[in-house]
Image (cartoon, rainbow, N blue to C red; front, side, top):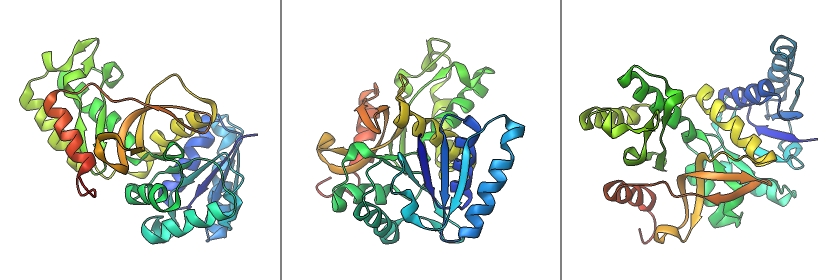
Length: 284
């Protein structure tokens, strides 16, 4: 029986728990927070919505983070009243979970957790294929929506990739399409630049957008998926850097990143991508 542990009953953690429960593709979600009564109350509220939304995912609330040790996937979100698990505080949490025997993949759902994901690989030697960041994954949907407005169409017809390293992002306009045609043939360069500029204002993403992007990635880790899902992954040696996060299309399954796919980029986009990934990196 698949179990997902969501650590943190703040807005991000509660939204992810609700999204996973609503989709009903995992059997159990455990919402964990030191404020045990808050975690239990939010879990109960989500459970009571199950009959209305026609799902029967078991949702529980716990107060001890070690309840996450046996989970198939561990999601680090935001603690009630304390904000995201980040920095040294977040690193101490991951260290404690590892010491207790947690062997599942870690999903970093907070916009401020890029450093934490990289530090888990660099300082705790967690394999990069077990570390995934999802906060930036929602940006692709936002950009597709903006493109759709330009052509009076629907975002479902837009195919594009947002890459880079949070918070520096690059849109792969040169390979983006809408209805099978290149976007660059339908939308003027000045409008594409305007959308790129708007992207800066869309970060950080909010709890509901993060939850919508995180749920399918968690499910992909559990059951595998033929779709390439865009998320932050830790690269090791690519582009001349180690233990750095890069937002890339991923193949997921068996509780890990099965493969990383480099999007098709123009020469200028590739330079922007490499600059984003290597910025402030040792030797970068």
